[in-house]
Image (cartoon, rainbow, N blue to C red):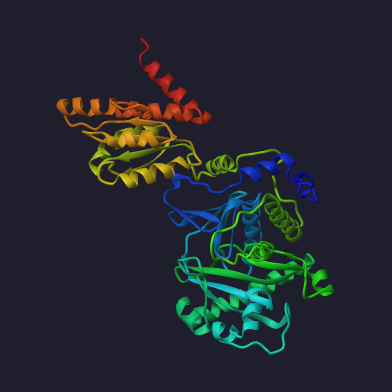
Length: 480
C-alpha cells in the first residue's frame, strides 16, 4: 500500500509516515527517572506520588507483543485516553494529572486493584465464543438468555471481570472471586457501578459520532481509601467500536474500529497466541494505523497532531519533559565498584548539581557480578537522553574497562585511592586500557564532572551556556 494514499484526510506527510513506519517509538528509556516498568504498550516510571507513562507504538494481541511498531499508535492512544479520562472525571476521580507530550501522561501513583472490569453491551468477541461453547456461566458465574446470535445487543450491559495476572494472560473470574480480589463486596459493587456508568457515558459519546461502543474494559486503583479510575479509557486497545450504520445494515458483519482487525488477520494466519509471533508486513501496519487515526478523528472530531515532517519521537519527548520540569535532560550515570566509592562520587556530583546536570548511581562490581554490569550497560545504551558514564573503582579497575568496551556513550574513569601508593596502582590500572576500550581517565572528581558536562553540552545548548558562564567566573576570579 502506498503511504501517500493511506490517509483519507490531511495528517502526517508521506515522508513523516514513512519515517514512523521505519522508526516508530518502540521504547523510551529515560534512566534519569529511575527504574522503568515495561508493560505491553507503556513504559512507566514512578517519581514520588506521580507515575509517568510513555505510550509507545508497540502493538499486542493475544497477550503477545509484536516486534514491529504501528505508526503514531502511541500518540493516538495517549491522547484518546486523556480525552475520555477528562469526560470520566464527571463520574469518578481519575489518575490523570498532565499530558506534557502527545505520547506521555503524568498520573497519580495508585495501588492497583488486580481486576479488569470488562463491560459488554453486545455478544461479540470472546464472549460470543464462550457463549457458543457453553462455558460462559462457568467463567463468569451467570447465564445469558438462550438463542442469542452473533453480535446480538444485550438487554442491558454486563460486567465480565478478569483477574490481571503477572504472566500477561488475564483470567476470567466470577463475581465472588472478583469481590475477593477487589478487597470486599462493597468495593466490588462500587467498581461495578462505576464501570456501568462509564460505559453508559462512553456509549452516549460514541453515539454522537455515529459509533457503537460494543465492549471495553476499565481499571481502578486506590489512593488511600479513594477509588480512582486509571489506565486507558475507550481507546482502540481497550474497546471495540462499530459504525452504527453498518451494524444496522448487517449485524453479523459490522464495520469496526478496533484492534480486532489485527486479531482477525492473525487468526487467518493460524496464530491465536501460541507459538512464534508472526511478523507484521508494512501494509498491515499501515492499515492498523489508518484505523487508529480514523477512530481518533471520529471520536474527537479533530485531526490528530501528527508531525508535518519526519521527527524523532524520543528526542521530542525528552524536550517536552524537560520543558515540563520532569527531566533535567542530560544525565551522568555513576557506576561504582563498591558503596565505599560514594564519597568520590559525591564530590563529582556536587559540581554537576551546580551545572544543573542530573545524576544517578549504581553499585556494581565487574569482578563479582559481571553479568549485572553487562546488563546495566546494555540498558543504558538504549537511553533516550544524552548520557555520560563515570566509573569509580579501585585497584584492578575492571569496571571502567568492561563499561568502556561495551558502552555507546562516553566513559570517564575516576579511580578511587586512599594514599599515594594506592594512587599509583589505581591510576595505572585505569590508564592501561586495551584497544577498543576508550575510557578517558580523570583524577580530580570535579574535573571528571566538568569533562562529562562538556561532552553533554554538545547536545544541550542551555548546559553549554551555563558552562560558558562558569568559565567566565573562573577567569574573572584570576583577573588582577
